[in-house]
Every structure is written in C-alpha cells, then in structure tokens.
Image (cartoon, rainbow, N blue to C red; front, side, top):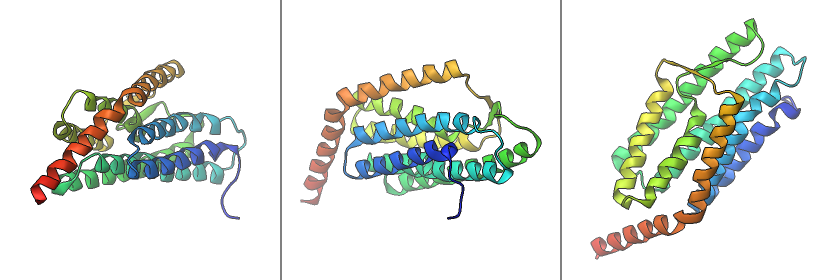
Length: 226
C-alpha cells in the first residue's frame, strides 16, 4: 500500500472523519451537532503536529507526507466544512456564493503557501515553527462557534449578514502577509476551555433559535409563492 502508516497521522485522519460526519449532520439540519464536530476537529488539529514530533527518526519523505496529509485534510475540515455550514445557515444568493467561493479559494492558497514554507523550513531545521504566516485556517473553529452564538440575539436576516461578513474577513486574513506567534500550551488550553464554553451554550440553547429562524423563513417563502 502507498503512503506511510504510523501514529503520527492518526489524529489528522480522526479530524477528517469527524468533519465528514459533521457535514452530513449539517445537511440534515442538525446544526448543533455540526458545530460540535467542527470544534472537535479543530481540537484534533491543534495537537496532531505535537504528536507527530514525538516520533524521532522520521525520514524526509515521512515528514513531507505528514505536511501534505495535514493540509489536504485541512482543506476539507476548515475550508469546505465551514463553507457548507454557512451556506446551509443562509449564506446564499449571488453575493453569498461569491463570498463562499472566495473563502474556499483563500483557504487553498493559505494551505498551499503553508506547504511551501514548511517544506523549505524542514530542510533547514527541526522542531515546530514559532509563527503563523497569515491567520491559520483552524481559527475558523474558534471564530464560527462564537459567531453562531449571535443567532441567539439577532434576527435570521441579520445573522446571515453576520455570517457572510465573517467569512469574507476571515478569508482575507488567511492570505494577508503578517506574522502571528503560535500560542503556548497554556494558551492552547485556555482556548480549548473558552471554545468548550461556547459549544456548551450552543448545545443547551441554540435549537429553538435556529429552527425558529428556518421555520419563519420557510413560511415567508410559502406566502410569496402563493
């Protein structure tokens, strides 16, 4: 079989599987489950690199394979999955389609550029890079759950515009040329706790608000069609 099979890529594959399951849940209208899957997928991605670096004596091919697998999975987990979720939540029409396409293109550019930088860096040095170039694509797993909380206090119409604006801004930050220092282990733990609180709030309170907005929209469409 082609490829490399060891524990260094298992967490990356788990992240991918969770995201694929989350997409099926989003399509079925289970938005709470989908948001949880996005957050868990991001959690897996936070630590897959740390786990990979625990294996000593990896060949150059194994390291490069890990870089490629990580980015390919990230395209689906943090590019396609959030775009699909936002589309189902109401980012539609011509403008919505343009913004979703823009987000996906910026995601691919961000990851492709990361592959180039990381491949060149690993030829010269070992260990982890201390800086991100541009906003990391996994940041959507932190931003989207908090934006989702705004559905509690805004109308369905306003929430769609908030999602659209968020996608455009985040996508642009993916490709802007700036350095962002990677968080320490303590900061990562704090981020996990904060996101966990947001996800817990979504699980407890979001069902009525989102479904109410969808029902209201469907009723409005039915009135217009009549």
